[in-house]
Image 1 (cartoon, rainbow, N blue to C red):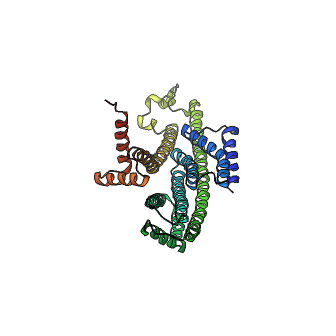
Image 2 (image 1 turned 120 degrees about the vertical axis):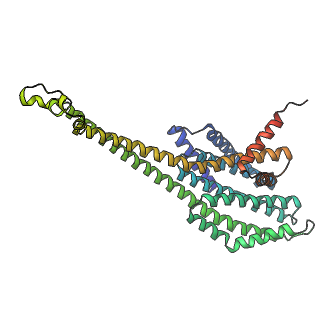
Length: 378
């Protein structure tokens, strides 16, 4: 199945970029795609190492995690560049759900490794706690942007027996003494329960992907209808203006044309027509109607753009905060030699203490660490 998906992805990228010559919205997209293609090229070698047991379970798990992180990064860049609020929200919901599912996969793998060894060391407990909290964070973001239908599906998964049993095993692994030995059979039970949960999540993930395609199609059709309406309105305005010009070109219909005559006809000269009468000519009325039509068109477009801008602000803010948070976490992990979860909790605590958003605190941390790292040593 994964090989088929690999082939399908390569064909899609080839069709999009090499045959149709579509340009990405930023160079970051190309760099993310390049990383993924190179990582996919390495998959067969890694699988070979696994078959011959020439690679540890820990290294193999880390390798697969890096590949999935690269794939998720492409979705992140797509969401960041989406110009439609509905599409952007669907992408953010999908991105966070996929990220949560990936954390669930990592938890399944690492716990199975620890349980197979018969002992759960403290370092393994901390890693599993980090992955559990990471799932809670990403699924919380998913719930902020997902439609009600998919929220209900997610809550049903969380209420299943396998989720409850999985939570019980989590508690056992955290409470057990480091020196206490566990039966290796528990590893199989854990793996089966975790797989049931991940399979259910995969089914929901497919629904989210289908919904994303549906939303994209609906928004495309909406834009096409709007363009047709605008074209019809412009055509109508053009026809009205043409009619006005045609009437003005006829001397007897142009009330501003001076009348040269004698006797009674002379009294119809435009010099004797009052201003109030002149302003009520058919041509002037049609000019006003055309002007109002143009104004209505521009006003509608301005209103649509402003509404789109406001709707995009929320999703862009979430993506911007996510980007800053990930960078701040990475910098803290490197500078303080701490885990991802510990780094996140430090940022979260500082945000609560200072009454700031996570993105604002992340920006401060990034700036501070950059200043410290770039400061010349004496």
